[in-house]
Image (tube, rainbow, N blue to C red; front, side, top):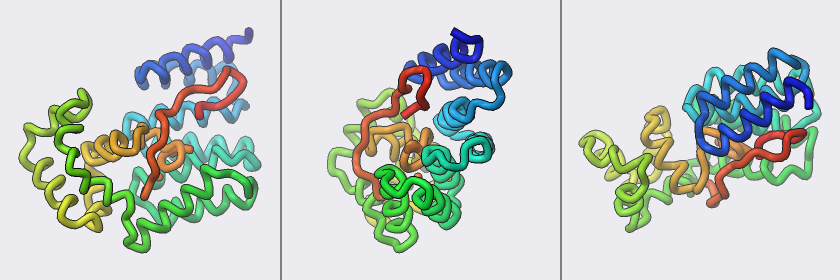
Length: 219
């Protein structure tokens, strides 16, 4: 196994364990050993997005596309990062560019549909906040339970429950992004269709992203 593959495997394991800082370190070491591997930039992009470091996620996604412009997942990573930055029109364009290269990509098609819904005010993703069990879910999730002690967060959730179209103005709040990920069943920040294949809204519930075998990208 090459040095790059060794670090990549460690990064995949760290990502699965949600140790995203550690994953970034390993993927960075892998890139140091093989800077031509587009998958490594994709994986690190997902890790950055999981930490809501969307500018860095975007830079890695663009590097991935530069190395392999025919690979659809690079566009998915970029689209997810742009959604995280609330640049929905750019995200839509990115997903469409990806589809021009991989017309059968279900992830890219979904990205287009979901971002378009958000731009059109369809906000099916916002409707997730109308779940009557929402506060119970927040209270039982270790990543969101602390938010319930913050009055401004409660005010935002109450607003979203009254008016789902208010979602766009709250997307820069990492707490809202965290809740969105919980409701979708993913790390939104990883944007793997959304944020992630990200890698970005109206979203059907998806399984949490996991790394593929070493020669593949994070799913």
